[in-house]
Length: 610
Image (cartoon, rainbow, N blue to C red; front, side, top):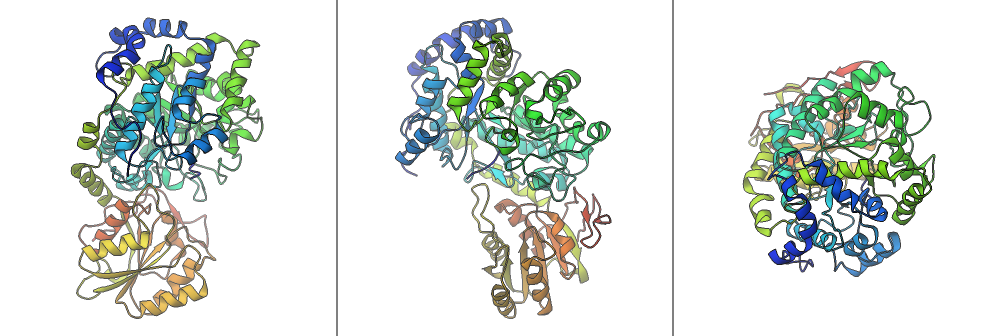
């Protein structure tokens, strides 16, 4: 999925017991006996009876997972009402549910759904109340993209963990499982029951513009182990995990948000490289799998994206890999799925391919009516819709949504962003920071010898609702560790004048920390580091996104890979620099030489320590 971007929150009171009973009476009566307290297999006969009572319009709605603007299900801000009217033709989430009977809603920060945990819980309750209050009302499966690292929709004060490549550098299945367990518990406390994580793509292309550090790494066996561990963690907390992006998005130099990538792997290479993490996820009991908007000619030579490919989704995923859980598309607003067919054809073709949930179409009315028309005209059968609806209802039942659709504010207080959870995130992060260069044992940096530190570098917009900017977070962490640190933002493309200011400031410091972000051969960031080194001051480069930066910085006497510029990873890098913890991370991807990409500079598993 892509990101395009305190006070009264509405629905502030949790629905009363009487309201809950009234709203859910019909559905709960149908399923109470079918749904034990937690995650047992539901009684299909009862679910099938539920499906049989649905109108065709209700069935079509159950297949869609839709965005909606606003912090409240019934009383969003006027700007969000206007956005909803413009994009969806409704004013609120409650109206969206009444008109289209959608089975799921996805939360985004840019849609103002995720201001803070108590508001999120209220919004979730308001959505459930609105849906369950409808005739034959069903609970809603609320989802979000909470991968951690550079992609997360719920920010502070919720606990934010290192991203996948950092976890890959740590290499610990127990850490991955703990991440899923804690993150899942916090999402569930806020009413979010489906997380579009973990990323199961094996990132073997350093130029990959869309996956990169969102992947656990380049070794399919290591990725498989960590995917399975996170799945166990999330689902053990009662949240549906989602392995993405099937059949594998790790070897592309095209972003499927803006283009249509092609994966040129042979069938044999796909089996060896891309398939293992998805097999591991299926073996771990994964609840849902997300499709990729890309073409894999070796798996389907029709020219269709995998999202619309019956040979891939039914032939391989369902029949060959034996997966019978929920299949959800990546966002239908992405160019990779829209480039060949119009927005009215895409949802119909996706269902014919084997998809169960249609995520975030750009025009819901067009997509909803296209599916409705396809059934009425015989292109899709109602029985085909029933197959997918049954899978979705099984998942809702497994997650406890029929028995307990609402969440309480006490659960938010007890669970979200607790001291113990934040401490666990810090401990996990400390095992991920990777030391790649340490000439003359510059690190750990001595406070006595280098008390005054200048922090310069790139300051990309802070991800995941964290504090930011990165230089400020690094300087603040170093100050807490006993240094006197100041921050000077130089950006991702520093000009000659900006570099000159940084060099002048470096002459008044004892040491320099330079945060780098996707350095290229002709980058101003590379010139910045070179000129800082020329001052004679010790320079520590911290790659705050891709670890490949180190290949472009041969002059830097010390280089660390942090894998993201979220607070938790930057604080860990600062503790490593200061010697409070030893660097323990090992590269989960190889770093090629800048002057000869066919040669490996640092292999998978490389990492120094003190």
